[in-house]
Length: 229
Image (cartoon, rainbow, N blue to C red; front, side, top):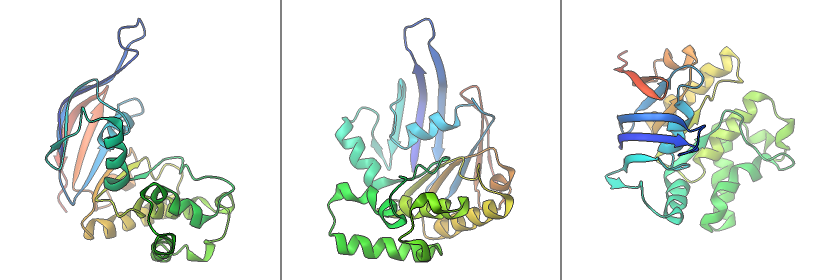
C-alpha cells in the first residue's frame, strides 16, 4: 500500500516564477490493484507518479510505502527502494539506442550485482513471456513501437518489483497495441502486482483492468472513484 498525506510539490520555490505542480493531495494506492491517474496535460499526473516512484521528493507532506515513511530518507535509501520496489514504464520508452534488446532489459539489475548467468536467464524468460525473444539480439532502434513497449515492460520487471509505475504508456501505440498493453497489465495484476498508470487514454480507463480512477486537474484530485465491472 502507498499512502499520500497532504502532498505538495513546488518548483522554483521562493522565486517569482514559483510553480505549484501538486497541491495538498492525499490518497491511498490499494495493493495488488490497478489505479489510473486521469487528467489533461498539466494536471500533475506525471509529477505525482514521480513522487510515488521515489524519483522526486515532495516539497511538503508525507509518503508512506508499505507502512514505512519514506519522505525524508537519504538519497541512497531512495535509490535502493527504486531498484527493488518499482518498475518504470515511460512514455518515450527511454531505451538505450545502440544496445541490444537483451542489454536494455538487464541494465536496471546491474547495480544489484547479481550473477550474470542467472540475470540473463531471467531476462530471456521475460522476453519469451512477452513474445519478443526473437529480437533478443536486435538493436532497440530497429524495433517497432509495439516491440519497444514490450521490451520496456520486460525491463520494468527484471528486478521483480511489487509496484509498476507507467506514465502515458499507450501514448505512442495504436488502439490494437494499447489493448494488448492493458491485457499484459491484467496478467501482471493477476500475479499480485500493484500498478499505477497515468493516462488520458479511454482505452486504459475503459479496459476493465483498472480498479480505481483518480481524476486530477491543476495539481489537485477532483474525483476518485472505484471502477466496478
